[in-house]
Image 1 (cartoon, rainbow, N blue to C red):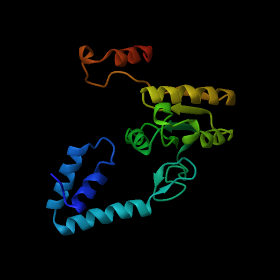
Image 2: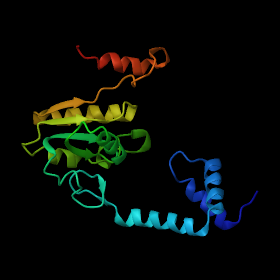
Image 3: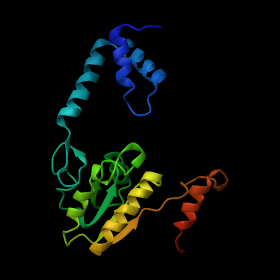
Image 4: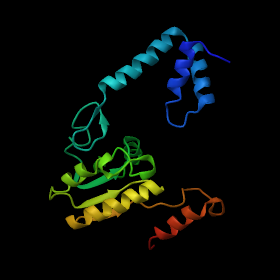
Length: 198
């Protein structure tokens, strides 16, 4: 079926979202068309407001309403540790635990040669500049255990070692409440590798 130009354009725009294929884009477009006009206006306005009012922190590259962000400008944060994450959503996940009280550095991506993303395409130089501050004693790598995350972690470790700063990595393994028999081999291997003495 050939859609009217306006609907085809809407479907095409939805397909630009990550993990959204043609069928999902079509469902979203038709859902939007069934929404009341006032709701669509609010939706469109919220997108414009988010784009207009969101800044990138000049220190850690977190997305925020201000720059420097609330975390970087907080005097309560421990300035001796920097937790390195790939994206702002990862920072939020760590913050939700209420366990980490240090600073962050958002790389805004991971090294992925297959996708054409090299070390110069993410915020590695800016991280290294931050490490010249003598108050930084530890860098925590909180990157995914994917191929890209592993490659980025190895690359960062090589670059950070000469600074004489402690480098640690978050542990990976079994989620709480999971059955061992249903876990894949890589997850079990990471759990064994990250074991600790009791």
